[in-house]
Image (tube, rainbow, N blue to C red):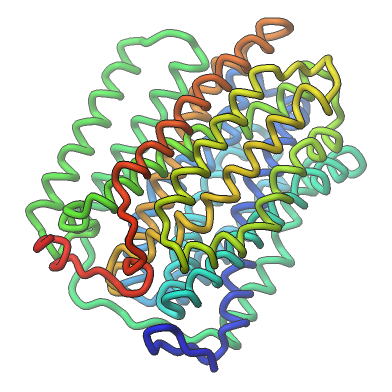
Length: 472
């Protein structure tokens, strides 16, 4: 039995970490592998350049929109129970993707995958947050982040090899054994978490989901068609209006809200939210565009494009546990300041990327520096978010932060349609412009951490209650 820094215990700490790693790796593997499969999917199912971003966004849209309610459901009904439902739904949807006979059928199954991921991701982190604390939490989250990075590392090259040898449908069958293993471990070794009292904020959930969904659809439509029609403009306005109503609803419900606004009384929590949006927005677009650039612009095979991403995930996988432990010692400020700034330097180096030139000189240097910077930020960011709220809201806070990160990546992916629609030299130029934008976003994320986070370590040693945030 492991005992945390503040006396919290968990009966099966190693199995708890293993189960959450397996569950969350489903989302990590699927996201990275599908990026490599886009050209093959488009060729087989007849998707055009304007259709291909939807193969990503059909998954990211419900994932981003529902992560908040996914975390709240776990807090209310039990995180293990909700997570298992999410894993099961994700698995069934993966089989649907593999069997899809048309692009429409694939997009529908991808949407179901997004719903399943919205249930499993925040609750996997919520379970870690309730099982560990202090330095033990930093190590656990570091291990979790490392596993996610390793899964992301294995996904593209192995998935690319499967695409080349078996076909793109086989990548979705990869999820089945992983999901079954995760469900078995959760049922056998992981205890259910305590449930929060009161009723769920269904109105807030509907407003947040509707607002994010409408904005994402509008941005994707605009980026692929290069025009703002009356329908797109109206949809953007409606999405913004729903999000404003969501904020007003949460303010009215106070502590009964799905996302209590008292949490935002903390400058650190606000800073972590802004940092997450900027950093993952910068990262999401580039990780989607780079494989596409190499395959379409450089003639890479899916396997080669997958291997091109390997340094990114290897560096994060090797160092995340170390940075998680370091954060438990020195606090999150400096890792979350230096990491994004280094990431921004890496994006700036990717402005030199040329799919016709040598990978070793035009792509690898930028990828390596981006990986080094993200390795310094992933585990500290997750640890800091879990430590910024009281245990009752750890699932909700995890869901909110995951929603922010996925929303940043979702918007970047939606706007990436403007790059994918180009060809030849225009494709390379559009990618390099996107790399510049990503560099600016990453540098802004690092500056946000420097301004909003304190030097103290105590935020990692104890939980912050919303009432304390209001008093501060």
